[in-house]
Image 1 (cartoon, rainbow, N blue to C red):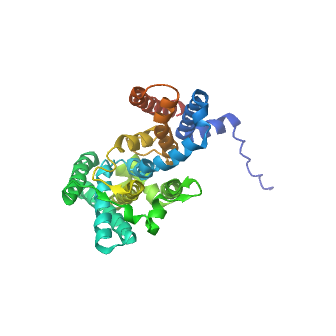
Image 2: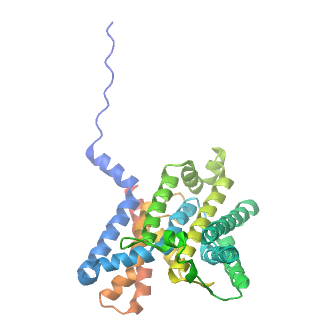
Image 3: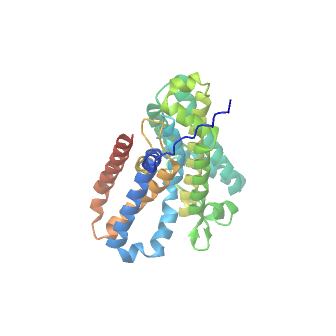
Amino acid sequence: MSASAPAVSAPVPLSRRLRSFAVSWASQIGITVAFAALWLLFIFGAPSVFLSDRIYLSFAQTVPYFAIVALFLTMVIVAGDIDLSFIGEMPLCMVGFTFTWQATGSAELGFFAAIGVGILCGLFNGAVVTIIGIPSLVVTIGTQFLFSGLALVLLNGKSTPLVTTNSSFIYWLLVGKVGSIPIDFFWFLILAVVAWALLNRHRLGHNAYVIGDNKQAAQLMGVPIRRTRIMLFVLVGMASAITGMMNSLSLNNFFPGVGSGYLVYTLAAVFIGGTSVFGGRGSIYGTFLGAFMIGGLEAGIVAMGLTAYFVTPIQGAIILIAVSIHAILQQRLR
């Protein structure tokens, strides 16, 4: 009796493969098309501005101030939580920096003190959310006021000059330049790679996706839910410390309101990038492009000849349109 020949599976049709690719990468495709369309509009509408390297050097310095936090906030939202306290963590971390720097004369020790305060803020947020069981939205609204209020109290509402830190290694590391490119941008690129690796190539990111998609299933699978969620809040705290130092050192001055204007920009970058507010879906790539979209809107609108009054309504419209496009793509392609 002759052995039967092994069955040969039929090749998958090209149309099905393309559809599978589109379903898997719908969010990234959507944000890429939106980003390209917006930038082409700016280039054709204001070529003298958007074909010049000066505007991009400006973006390289200003966008990281909110985009670095947005990268790690993406991971928190993927896990089904949210953190609105980062605008309070920035000044409180800077209090740790200034107090340590003034006491020791070392900006380098101040850097580690700021990172340490950021870690403690993240641990506090995560512990209250996971141990007491209060929704993260409510907790981080409260801690936003708590952290920023503590910074005001500890500084008595006064600003602190940081001019004498200019000769320190930390000053160059956070706000120096490599050639003509601000080093802030290189920090953004490096941390974007780190965030992407954590979310897509590390167990922490896998656990975040599972928790955000179905917390009950994650519990049955043995996923360390509490530890994962706390760790994600800690990452946001550390990112807040870095951006708070970048912002303050670039101005040679620390004032207790540092970071207060970045809440909307940071959230907009995350949601424009396709991260679902319900958790379980999101990408660092989308947030990366979303940050430049929201960071370039004001300059683009003004450069095209519109008054600054148009900036806010157009920003709101673009956020709504982008989120709607992501939702429609997901529904249609499924």
